[in-house]
Structure formats: C-alpha cells, structure tokens
Length: 434
Ligand code: GKR
Ligand code: MG
Image 1 (tube, protein in one colour):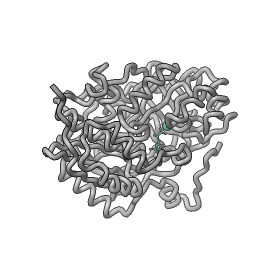
Image 2 (cartoon, helix red, strand yellow):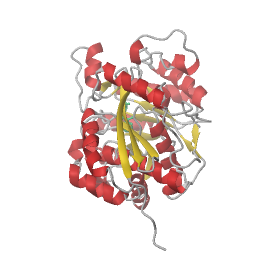
Image 3 (tube, protein in one colour):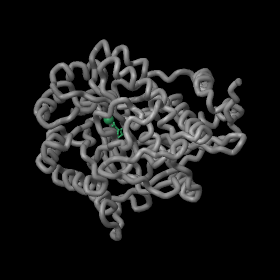
Image 4 (spheres, protein in one colour):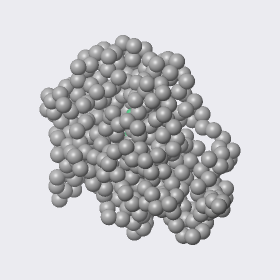
C-alpha cells in the first residue's frame, strides 16, 4: 500500500516578542532590559499546530515573512525539499555573515531552524511520538545543564531596568543582585545551584581583565571543590599569549576553556600549548568550517546550537561528524524561553554521548509563553518530554503580553554595544581586548 502524503501547511504566524532580561555583561557589552525572540507557529490544513522559537531580529522576521509564500501548501514531512527551497530563495549564509559578535547573525540557519522545529512538532503530533524519537530516539531520560554565571549590574531588566524588585525572594532576588567581583560571582553561583541543582558551572568572561576573571574561577573552585566542573568563556577577547598564560594557570581546575581567542588558527595555537580541552561556538560555527577545523585542530568540543546550525536534524549530523573526527559536542545558548529549551532537551536526549552539561540562559529569564509556565530543573536536569511533538503548547495570553512588550520596547535587534554605551558613554566593542 502506498504511503499517504503528510499534512500541508495552511498558515504561518510569526510573533516577535520581548522577554525581560537582566543587565548581564559580556564581551559585546550589556544585555538590554529585554531579549528579543521570535515565535513561529505553523498550522496545517487539518489545524494541527507546531511551534518554535528563535532569537529575534527584525531582518530575520522579515525573511521569515517572505518565506511564507514558499511554505504554504508544503507537506511538513518534506523537510529536505523545504530546506532546498529556502536555500534557493535566501542563498547560503557565508561564515562572514555570522558577524564578530558572540552570537550568530546568519539568516538561513535561523529560518530553517524555526521552520524545521515547528514541522517536527507537527510530525510528532501526527505520529504520536516525541521529537526525540524523530531524531533517532532517546539515549537518556534527563538532560543535564550547567549553571551559566554572568558578571552583571544590579537590576531586574524589563521595566525595572537597573532597579530591583524589593518583594523578590530566593533565586528571583539573587538574580537581581550585582556580580562584579569574585565574591559576588560565587554568591551568584551558590544561589543558582541551590535553586536549580546544577552540577557544572560556566562563567561568561570577556568582561574584565583576565586576572579578575581567572580569580573568580579559582574562587569558584574554592567554594565548590574539585567535583564541580568549571568552564570560562571570554568570547574570543584574549590574545594567544594571554590565553596560554591564563589557560596554563587554570589547567588544574578547568573542565574546558571556551573560545579564549578569535579564529581557528589562533585557537589551534592555544590548543597545542594547553592540556585543557578547548570548546567553541565562535570559531567553528558551520559545516563549511569543519574541514579547516580538522586540518588545523582548532578545538576539542563544538558547542552546537540548533538555532545557529540550521535545526535539530542538522545538529544530529554535526554530532555524527564530531564523533567521526574525535570532537566532543555540547550545546551553546542565548537568552531564551521554554519552546527553545524543550527543543534543546529533545536534541540533548538524542545525542549519542553527553559528556558535558549543556549551556542554558533559562534561569536568567522570568517570563514564559508555554502553558503550565516555567519548565522545571531537577538536580540540574530537565526531564525529556514524553508527549507527542515538543511536548509544550503556546500560552496565547502570555505570548500576546510579550508581543506588547516587543512593540513598546522599540528594540529590533540585539545590540549590546549600544546598551553598554548608555552606562559607559563611549564604550566600544573590540574584537580582541586583552
Ligand atoms: O548572552 O551575553 C550572552 C552570551 O555572551 C551569548 O551571547 C553568547 O552567544 O552564550 C554565548 C556563548 O557561549 O558564547
Ligand atoms: Mg561561548
């Protein structure tokens, strides 16, 4: 008997939203009071709805809008053809399109990720299978995440900006405190680990001179002991000599060193000089960069991100390549809500190996747009959803509220340099600083 065609796309809804984000510091400057995300909802002719979430940028939203005319009428199972159509319409992103910022600014990878995840959500609902099963099946029931620490100014983000909500308690209170020195970073880590049970810790660096950030790593080691793996990510702001000097000093305490320097050649030089593994979400960021990464030996671990690598299935392909070439694979994140977290959990559950706890910014966000509210962490892990599809559904009232935030806040793309200049006039992003 011949198979039946899959459901066809009838409607696509693109909703830009702004979610409250605290004043977190990083190599590119400062987080705005709101992080932008875009929620995509694909509805089939038989009214099955699939959802996804990507970082929000006006240009990418416009390209998604343009892609509607190509996507409407397509069979959601035909992801290979859909991808090819999108490549033909938007061209391939080049490595240069990624930009110098710590996050990825390419169009096609975002669009395909948004479309693919929403289609997989629908396919899961139609076949009565969780997304993880569409990726080859579950390798674990829980997906572990790491505490992601940030230097930050005091403040809550959103309308409160740099103010704090005096009624907040627990992690909600701790999240608003400043963290500008090693003691405050340790306090942040303790509060975050107490709340979420994380068992690995990552410090976002590239904010202060390396000495100060390395001291924070040693303060974390002192506070948490040798059983809690530590990582630091200066987002490529260090010179090769700086990375080798401080990398050697941290060799006894680091699980891995993330993007100490910019570019595959520089990473390869640092890698030769250190025993600590190097991880990246900045120097090897696309399939076309892999041959050179292998030839040079630029990193040990690739931090995938389904929003930046073109979806969940592409990330599984990356996992296979990493396995072939002896690279580890873990996951990068940016400020995000529960739809992205659910997709990350399905992918994390399907990965053949899980050597490192994944990154997530989720504890820093306080809003949610899924029914049932914020997803829960148990001992630092998220339980893999067993419901069909992603296992999360849109809370339309919450979505509408965050869309109103988007319209009111006036932001159209992430620009941490501009936000930083509001606090430190004249501040300039530098690709390499120390
Ligand atoms: O949220 O400021 C931030 C991070 O610096 C983010 O933009 C990076 O993309 O988390 C990311 C990383 O690991 O490089
Ligand atoms: Mg990174």
